[in-house]
Each structure stands twice: as C-alpha cells, then as structure tokens.
Length: 309
Image 1 (cartoon, helix red, strand yellow):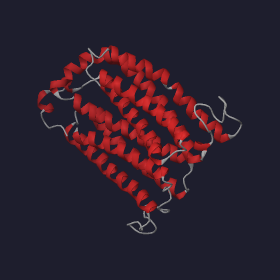
Image 2 (image 1 turned 135 degrees about the vertical axis):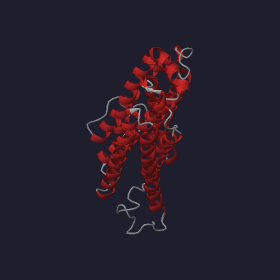
Image 3 (image 1 turned 90 degrees about the vertical axis):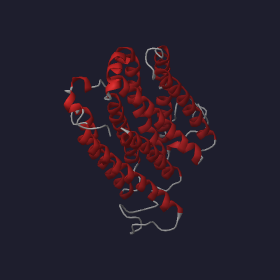
Image 4 (image 1 turned 30 degrees about the vertical axis):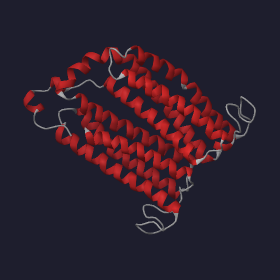
C-alpha cells in the first residue's frame, strides 16, 4: 500500500515538473527522444535540464507503477480489482511515454500536450484506487468501510461527476496554454471587455476554459455541502469538504492572477498543480466511497498467504 501511495504522490510531482517544462518554454529543450541532443546526459543549458528532469521523474514513476503491479500479483491475488487495475496501469504509463515522445517529435502539438496531461491524471486515479483498495482490505477496516458505504454514496456520486467535469477543464486548459490562447483575453473575468469571446479562435478556446472552470462551482458547492453534512457518519468527509472547497477557491484566485499578471511561471505552475491536487482529492473520495472490501469473502488461509505491500 505504501508503494501505491508513494506512486500517486510521485505522479503529482510529475505533473508539477511537466508544467514547469511548459511554463519555462523547455518543451523542446531536448529536441530528440529518448536521448537529449543525441546523448544520455543533457548539455549544460537550462532548458535541456528542465526537460530532462521531466523525463527522469517520468521514468521513476514508470518503475514505481511496475513495482505496484508486482506487489499486487504477489500479495493481493485474491482481490481481482487490485490486480487488474495495478496491471492495466503499466501499459497506461507506456502510452503516456509514447505521447511524450510524440510531443517532442511533432514539436508540441497542443492536442497531444493536453492528452498527455489528462493521461497522467488517469494514472494518478488508478494508483489512488489501488492504494485505497489495499488500505480497505486490511481485516481491521473492511467491515467498518462496508457499513459506511450508504452514508458516503452522495459524496461519491458528486466526486465522480466532478472528476469527469474536471477532465474537460484540464484538457481544454492544457490545449489553451500550448496553442497560445492563454494570453488571448486581457482582463478577468471579462475577455477584452466582453463576456463573450470574439470570433478569434484563441479567444474562444480561452473563454471555453473559463466557462467550464466557472461552471465547475455547481458541482463543487454541492459536493462540499454533502461531505460536510455527513462528517459525523463518514470520517473522511470533513477533510474532503475542506480540501476541495479551499483548493477550488485558490484555483479561481490563481487563475485570475495569471491573467492579470500575464502568466508568471510560479502562478502558471501553481494553477495546474492545484487542479491536479483537486483531482487527487476527488479520486480519493470516489475510491473510498465505491470500493467494497473483498477480504470478508476470502477463506482465512488464503488471506494470510501474504502481507500488504
């Protein structure tokens, strides 16, 4: 379980490093792949090292994902969900690597960059699901989690809907940044003095991102309220309510500051990292809600065959 948690956290770090690459214009710091300027070690200039650091962290995450899959097969063979999700995450990370290679070879096409980001989010959710499942399979916790499932159901439904909506926000945001549409609108919340974008494609993309991010509040507020109301019945509900509420508020403020201050690197990085942290929190809420422990249905001798990873 600890390895799965660490993998999820490292995936979050990977997202942050990826945004650093984009914010500093280092996406082509290494113009070839998998080598960097034809060598295993990048040359001395800054952009090459920033880009190479992203590849290095991605490689670490890849090995960690493989390690989680091995642990799943070794210790949780009696739990198909853990085995299959951990196993299927391995080719998903491979696909992520292919997208990274295409991004470099095709010189940063915005649709591939956006898909690359979204795939990282899916990997993050998979590792969280595995970690939560391993946690809930502990004999001392399995019964309690089964009993809390009805109380947590409204939270889980809203969290799942929020993840789906956030996926669209993240994809459009990634596309917007790489396509050059980030600076198409001066001012916030208006775009060049107007609620609606002009016929310019960049303005349309930019405002679509704002509309989706703004409409996200209609899922976040009910989620926060539902979680807070059930804090006495569901022990993780209060932290989820506070985290999601605070993070969304911070996300809106940072988004506005990005526009007002013309996207300085620290704010650009923070904007995506906060969004990824919201995704992380929502994924935990979904996994805690919907994963029902299988341990109680397994014969005792088989259950004791291995120890948690």
